Length: 613
Image 1 (cartoon, helix red, strand yellow):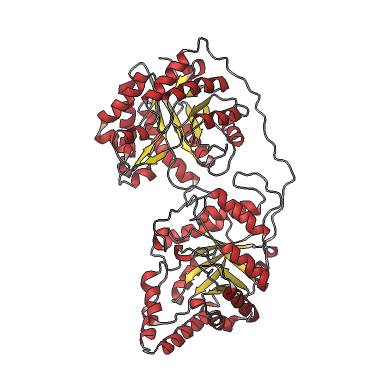
Image 2 (image 1 turned 45 degrees about the horizontal axis):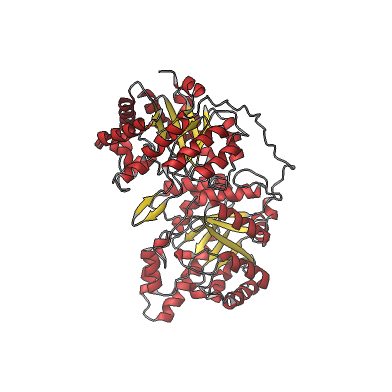
């Protein structure tokens, strides 16, 4: 057999079809680790390879798409990375014999990497190296990096592959029907990034059916002179009676195989939902082409970013809150929860009271405890307009994909909401609607990066947005974490991403806060302590036992228990909060006081010792 590079240069290459979806179609449900089938049911995987070879595939992919440390660890199989990948190649090699090629399949890690998550580029490259080195050593003719949604993760995988092997690397992104990835990167930008990478072949797979894939291919060939691969799904997945179904027919795939080649593809194949029948029709369509398709030579046009470079707004000029914080003033915030309906009269009245009492900022949570309430941005805009007091808007990653987040945040900037607290968000299961779905494209670290990008005048794909935003970026932290090392590590990631201040969970123990402040003293970040006035013994018991990240010490509980009357418990709770404010002042740059049951006057009373100082 020819070397695969030469074969791919001289021939239109036909890959196989879906592996995971075909395994599912054959009755193996999703609670099983499909990669582990290489060990427990090698004959079954062998039969799938043979089906695709009989259909006419020139190259088959190993059953190793998810066989990296991160994904296998979810099944307790992290120690079997080497074994699963090695056997995956051995099965495919045995099936292919001397008549077909074997390509090692590598998918995304299944975790968010920088700048959108806490996994570093170095850690990501290590995981990719661990997998790819085994695939190459076991005898794979090439490696395919497929179904990547974030270009920086794909680039790290390419770097890793080139550091451990010299076999060809195929790098494929998942692009939606609108010609953009889930992170908003266009086909043109993908093409240029892959053109400048060390990948041997660039391409796209998954996400869409043949029609949208062809449209995306026609864009890609204009900006990439490398060989291009396309492997669409069998249409959009449909869910029927508990099963995932794909409706695009094999005949339709045969028609589009010719169109892909005419449009400039060098490698074609199928992804989710495609079967040996789809590949058989593609093979027949390619055989009917009587002459080798003349290769297109496209002049690669490098996009240049138009416009002048923008200068980010200086931190102290972002908002009145920022000016006070950076001037060294002790700041005071009071939390205001949005109503469940559309009547905000109580909140506006409370905002006016807090402004009169000297509170600096109103802190507005975003669906706290996964509850359904008025949109926090709407309340923040109305409070600022009606009361003239600044707001700090919590923004959660739970409810929107990354494109929606960017749109919201640009909208917030236009409304004059410049103080943002980036939070991951409570999962729906803890709230009023446990069956609601969550998005979590990114977590608070990724959201902080997104805000920093907007402050630098660019969107998530690096394109200019014109005038930069001027967000003062805050994050949350849990000084009471049962895993303090991880909490500090995440805190550093947030600071590195651009966080300028941190608000802690409610603090009832001064020594816990002191240790936390000391552990991040080199991070150059402002600390605002959370203060929660307990209003009853029952409230104290709830905080101690049911609110994650809150530690209520025994002496506080004993104080609350020492009073029988409700009024006395309330007064004791307020006294505890006032005492805590006085204790935390030397350690932090400000406080955030919760308003129990919307009692804003109580919150202002708690903050009184530090107002106007």
